[in-house]
Image 1 (cartoon, rainbow, N blue to C red):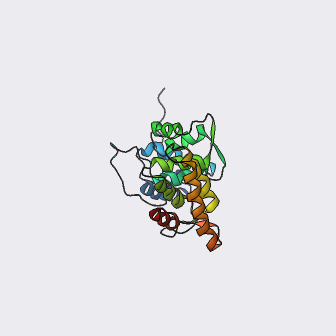
Image 2: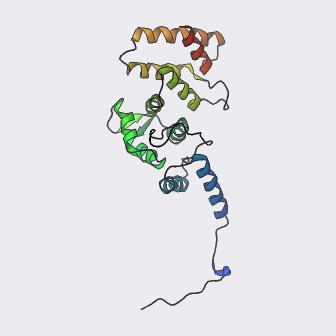
Image 3: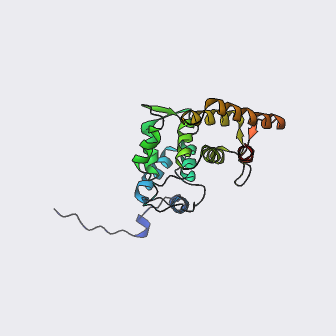
Length: 218
């Protein structure tokens, strides 16, 4: 039996007063993040919004560094989004992390490639995954540490990008140990030379200029 025609007037349609603002914020977030798959990203956005979790949104638009055909899409901005979502935990479940990765429209193959650098089963220390992600952006170990500082720093954008020296040491040792070509002794000598610079300022922080300048002199 066919359903009867139903007429609606403006008074019968209730629009929640918060809806326009939600859609406005969603549109701004989509423009900043520029997701490769809007539907996939939107599902992750509204799922996070409903749970009160950090949203998968970049702080600003990133200029593309390569075409989609030659690059898998991982950027410093996307790693920063993941850090906002996971950085409050010491360990992250890989299944949950993989879903967040997919919500950012990043290919699963890239996620598995990151994990292959230091295989684990069900969970991983977040700072280590972030470090591996920074190393996957290309370049040297020094470049990876630069990305890490810019993601972790509490300094304003364009500032010295300082992070605690102990955090720097932990990550630098971790990444250098994964590189068979870097002698352990060289790593310790390098970190000791950085410590002298940090202690002279007595604030326990290290910025990008500290280790880039030192590395250029060595």
